[in-house]
Image 1 (cartoon, helix red, strand yellow):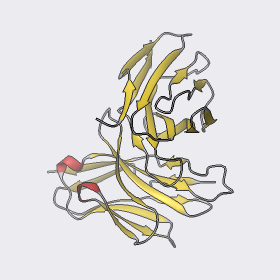
Image 2 (cartoon, chains in turn orange, brown):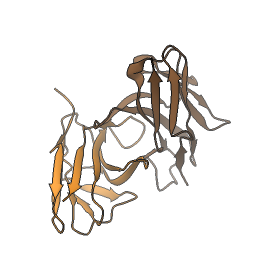
Image 3 (cartoon, chains in turn green, orange):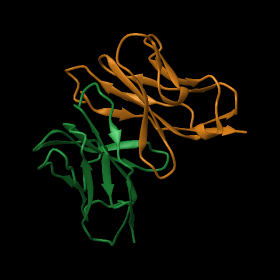
Length: 113
Length: 118
């Protein structure tokens, strides 16, 4: 069953904690992305990766970190430096970073408690 | 700067009537354009794309979109709306100009909520 799997679906973080959101794809896609979605603000790009062992900052990278050690995995860490982390996080992948459409996971809702 | 605008926060239409969700874009080079749909607490589902060729693009679930280069628009349309079409719709663009720092990146509009009433 091909696709993009995000886990967990819901995540609660205490103030000052780092948390890691998982994103795995078995579509053999080179490019992967992380977006943040807030009500009324659409999707904003956090980080993207065009190929293994390479990634670039998006528009709102501050307070976040990523790694791309394997083609199929692109985990996102929300650090304590991210002052307002409560949001819906979406991971996506595409065959390459140009031309083709991106496919999305089901999202992780992160809440600070 | 590259951008996408969806001028309507919400579109209301009666079931069986045609619907249009508007999108305009600004890019430096040739645009690659996409429409996605999102149901509550779910990821985005791909509907259709324009890369090149015919200006009228057909996609999933009876949706189509018309690319208009002179008006820099890519409006989503459906001849007959269903209640089940009610959802949040996003327009997105990729700027394919090699000199752009945004080359290849998907840029999304703010989203338009479509409400189809029985």
